[in-house]
Image 1 (cartoon, helix red, strand yellow):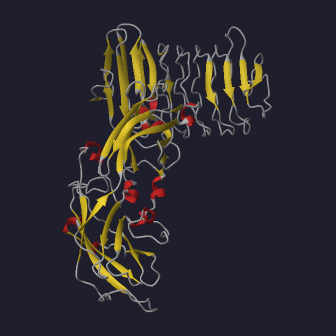
Image 2 (image 1 turned 180 degrees about the vertical axis):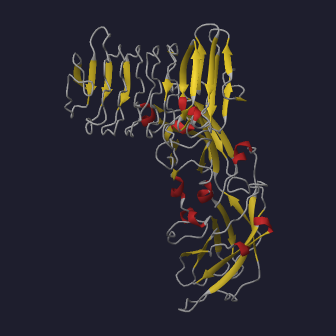
Image 3 (image 1 turned 90 degrees about the vertical axis):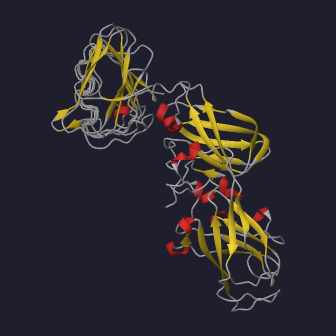
Length: 549
């Protein structure tokens, strides 16, 4: 498979180069000289050697040298004019085999079978890769006509470096020597490449929050960039291949993934008077004034009193890396399980990241012990140390079981939020904050599906908690909310959009919930659902029930 070397981001902007074509004399059949009428049995195969000089570096790269190389399966399209119809004909070479690739991938022998006699000494065009040739040829045109190229393939891209292999267009326009294919002609890259990074207001790259990007060139072409899964781009730069422009304004339409944030966020930055030359890579960064709700902030503990501390004890057999930072992420160090980190002054903080699918190894769980700390940031930074801002897919069971259990003086931060941006697995958050009696605000979670026991006892005994997280799942699963808010004496707001399987998903989930709350207690429900009342497994007595709009 073609690969794009990660060091694309470090390439100089002045990269130029060309692909060289030279025709060998190894024709399997001697081509006729001059225009001749097509016959039913006409078939001429010519084999040409196409050479890559390694300097043009905007498409697939050798992982070791950085030089452009051919790979098995590559094809080139040949465009020429038929002498019998005087119209253009497209011929696609046979796919390369490994035995046809030479000189470390810099040369390859491509074979073209011509079934129409070419017009002698007429124009020809090589298009590489062959997929960039138009499906049908323009009428009454020469081979160098723009209609021979499938420029519409640039309209929809997925933003990955690897995908450039399919669209990074290179062309050679030349003239037949009689009816023999031309040799020693440059095959030139045609596209400019944008290396795009979107930053949040803290200057952190968060491309993996972006749902869609559109580029509109003033008076020119539009490009739509949508991630492969339709949800968010992978970590790293977003690459876009586009036609060269000179002193043009480029309007960007950037859509933040609304599923991750439960809100609509669209931005329209622009790049003015841009000149983008072919065969060059242009880094473009945009900083958006977007509050990502600390989704890009690793799990963080901050001292609210002097002399605070944090200790993280890992379950036995949790062997993946855990790293920490006490200088706001400037430097990171390996963390040793059970090491106490002192936060001497108010405002001192420690961040954690890791690479473990789960922090639970039956029957043991990993556990933070904190003193005098706020908690905020994205807990999913413990699962993947680099990609945690949106929608991680958890694996296994009990991932964060009892992770912060019984930290009675751990508090919600007054302005920074706590997030759990991941899918739900069985028992993944069981008793995660149980006994955390100073927590007032729940973590932000958004997922439309629940799993067996995923929130079981999650906030049990959180006596200061005032509201539930937003619970959008319409169909419940066994014990998913069992005893979730059991003993949350000050709970006054619950938002739950469940419609089905309520009876076996909510056992005692609101037992004693809101007992000490002052003022009105409101349960917001799906308008299509009729809940029972006066029961801790449904809606307790004394709560106002309203439809969530």
